[in-house]
Length: 558
Image (cartoon, rainbow, N blue to C red; front, side):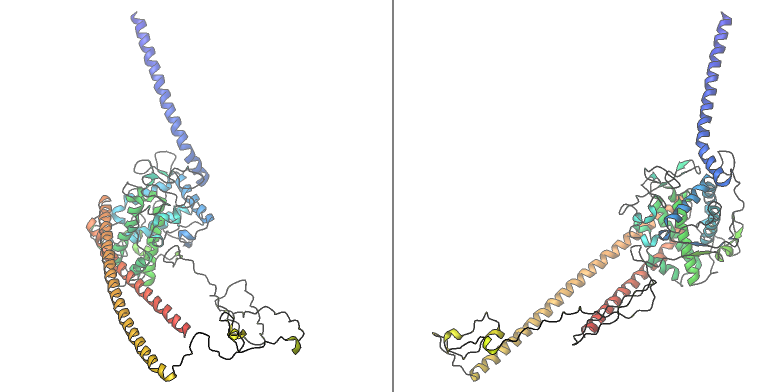
């Protein structure tokens, strides 16, 4: 019995062992099934696992490229960009599933070097090299691809309605939800974008795309403000760099949201494809500053307080800040529009209105101008409107005098013309007193004083009316001035509240990401100055436009 009991115990243990082995095998099978698609795509893109380069390539190598604004890319160009990103994401760095793919390695680099890349004067140079290294990696998948920059200043009034949030571009968003907002991944779009960095997770966003006011516009500077910022020669490079880093934090907060979307956290931010288009625009602004003021303007301090110099080597690139400042293989195509709703400028000449035909006895038809296939800048002579040909009148026989009826007028009351009859058709008759009504016997000399008195009365009435009207206008102006003052006070209060909320949110963003919140928010003061300068310029431009319109009307009426 003891032996049987031992055999039974052994058999029970053996059964549990087999069950455990079967469970482990099932788990491995699931893992292999999950890993298979990425490995298969990686093999298709790069021929299997490819070691990640170290150091990263930050040289163009005689390969210049042009970065265009997101709204100007064609559907084919967007499809190429999506293939490049998803292809990079599918390229494994080794045969082990636990290692990160190429796209995820860039997320990891941004997280690992956040201390050097943010909160100091090297912010712009470091991210320029980072963008170039990423773009070079993308070009190993699609050789012609470049990073599309998103000029969010054109969408600042309602950034959630920007075209970039289409599935065919950067993907839709819903607060706290993954990219695609419920849509399934298809082809190479960014729906259901999943990364293994900082804990495996789906990339999420903190706003609602394609919904009015789905994202807070207070975190986006408009185009006049951005222009005023890069044109301000009073700002040193250190002040400009810190202000631009502060400005760049606004879209991070708005797109990441307070629900903890990836863009709000610097350790995860590069995992959202919107990160790259956002930072490409920040680099564009620095490029415009360099073009307007100086290429090699540099200086300030790093996050740890040490001086920032052009010859500082920036890790992990093994290149200096000077390399970034002097980079000349990247060209940006600027979009000069203030808002995306403005029409694009065209090279066609402004059409000249045709002159009004003159009433000459014999109108001479003018040659009709034929439009050319390619519009030119020089105006073409305007065509003269030619009246349609008048058919030749048919000669009618002239009536004889006997055929014309005559009217015999007798001095009776019936000869008084009917006032409803047109004056040209009335027959002339001698004045006859109307029966029952005495004739007026007042002479011209008696009417004169009455007319003079009436004239004086009318003059007095006009003077009184002018006085009343002037008083009413003055009162209306006072009311308008008071209303304008109240409107100005309301606008100033609204601006104050907006700036307070912006500072509070960005201070929290800096603190959460390990930066000096006080130092980070010092960029608020230059930003406010740029906003005020832009508003003043717009008011002056509006006033000048009113004067120009008034002048044109006066000339036209004259």
